[in-house]
Image (cartoon, rainbow, N blue to C red; front, top):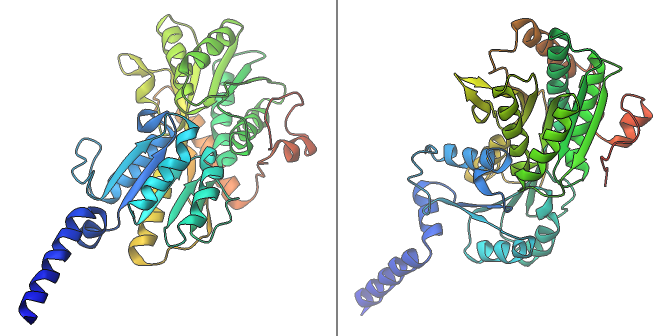
Length: 365
């Protein structure tokens, strides 16, 4: 009788493992994670792509060989914000060891769902105001990395002999995170060329590259030299327009964001329309959270990845960036780390310090 009971119990355990694959594989190969993204998905070549890259690398896979996808990790894309809460609840019901949400647009949904699953571990990127005891929040000093690409653009314009240069910024949905990108970029430009003119535009969408492409065309036609886009998939329109114009011999540039978008800007003979990119190592956020789950150190802390922590930086991949420019920017980078250069993160602070102009569309709320 006792043997029958043990046999039945063993069978039940096997069935449980089959029906709850994520828990079973967690013991065998590490923690399980589901990445939740907005509509631009992991093919945005930017923010979500970087988060996904960090997850894939954590498990020893590559983007070309995601052998453990569906076993230890997966991703679900919400086509509309109405799906944020249902997607969070579904992942929570499936008992992943970690649920990662990318971007501040997930904050309200996570604040609603996290209290319903107090034992579930969540991580959200770009948010520090979700005060739940089971949510790790990872933020970046985007203003510092953006300052560096602003310096790159201004130094390149000076090297090219551009008189009275104009620079553009295209944002996705206005908010404090995207404001950090714009504020850093503008401060970086003006630190090199105090009289430079700045124009900005917000698409109010992360996934409409046609909006950025149309705006970029208008600006390039009016004499704007370089455009920095922090707009998710929308920003790919800026790169597309820059590629088109540089292939025609026009001296205009796009600046990439989050990931190094140099390859995305290639238009002829390995020449790229992406002058540089503000590197925001979102992949590091994924790895930090997964490692904390793996070793049992997960806490509902705010983790800040700044220049000193190598959380942000700039790309020097484009060979048309002279070494002298790269060296100057690296000096500025070290000055930020050492505290000799102060970069303001909010529009209010930057305006009070007199380092950015009035009339920009950036929002601190």
